[in-house]
Length: 103
Image 1: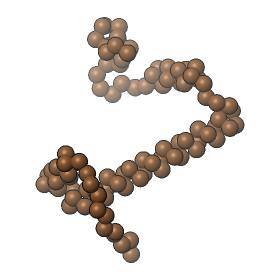
Image 2 (image 1 turned 90 degrees about the vertical axis):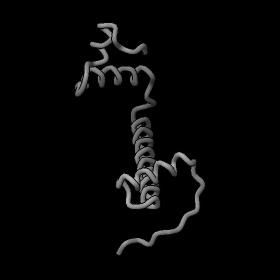
Image 3 (image 1 turned 45 degrees about the vertical axis):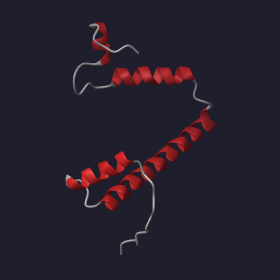
Image 4 (image 1 turned 60 degrees about the vertical axis):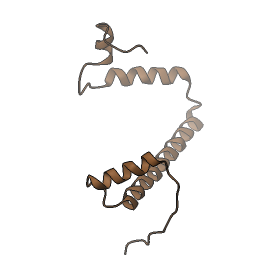
């Protein structure tokens, strides 16, 4: 059995309402209520993921000590070195040719 929906009165920015109506008109949503419900569900899922990540970091730091700036920089370098470029050129290659953005 499907859970019962609840009515909700909210105030939102006009551009958000327009985006919702555009999504309905384009067939990307069945209704404005459905579009808003999906947005709220996605936000709730994001909040749960962020909370879980914060708990994981807190547990790691409780066991191993606080993560320092050097460790973060080391990991960032390792992540960049391991990254696979799916489109275009890597940031490193772009910087070598002078086409990269300034950091």
